[in-house]
Length: 216
Image (tube, rainbow, N blue to C red):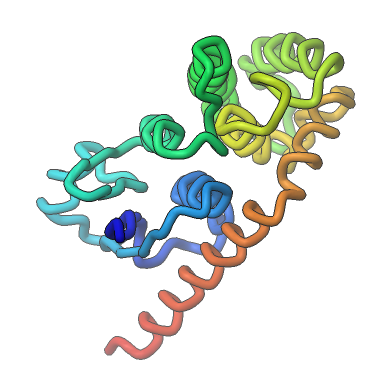
């Protein structure tokens, strides 16, 4: 029997980012694929040399898979895609389509959306990235107006990642006016594996609250 994949995330985070920390993407993929895994922690505060040795930027998640060590959520998803046909098709074109949309989610959408929300001021309309972000959403909305899924004809890790990337913009109202994108995020995040991953992450960080309360 194969050893479980070890997923490492923070032991605790403030309440604001809970439900959005990127170990969620890995939990979700593992649940979709039915792969055995266990969750380990690394300190959110006072990150040590061991953490930076595993993840040079002090971020999460990272995994250990029977001696194979991977960091960065996109790289981990591609690694898991190779292990499970549920996550990535095995035909060459299906695999290529999945890979290109994984990269697009990270490089063409998240690369714009993260700085957009980081500098966003709720009481102002002068975000310099607004036009750039809306143009990306316009083009993605056009793609998804004609299909349910990004790659092949079924759910893949490309959809998992793209929907997760879109969750913060949707929460902040940036998807208003893009009906296909809203429908897409709703469809993908209604999956049972996503709901379980969110519940598990929230419970994980809530347990960290209790530990901090008990610690002198």
